[in-house]
Amino acid sequence: MYEVKLPNLGEDAGDEAIVSVWHFEEGDEVEEGDDLVEMTTDKATFNVPSPRDGVLSEIVADEGETVRVGEVLAVLEDEEEEDEEDEEDE
Image (cartoon, rainbow, N blue to C red):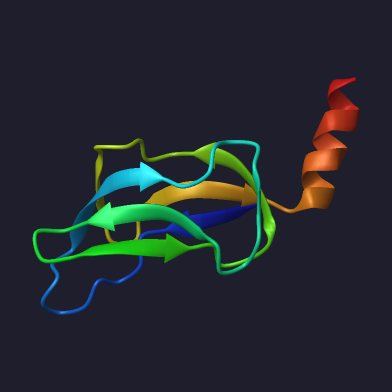
């Protein structure tokens, strides 16, 4: 499991942003560098990329929600972890 957090926005951008739109849904496979979510501040709009390959297992911050730097946006699972959970459910 890997938590995707809102990165530092820089000195001029403040310490929070609003979730504009998710580019993936829970359960989707993502690759490192894929844009996961679009965020908006009062000064800029930017995308948060996936830091690694995996499956988007949980979206923690919903569209329209304000998130502070360091807070969790989503949770990624390695594909192997996702497969193991499926086997346990059966």
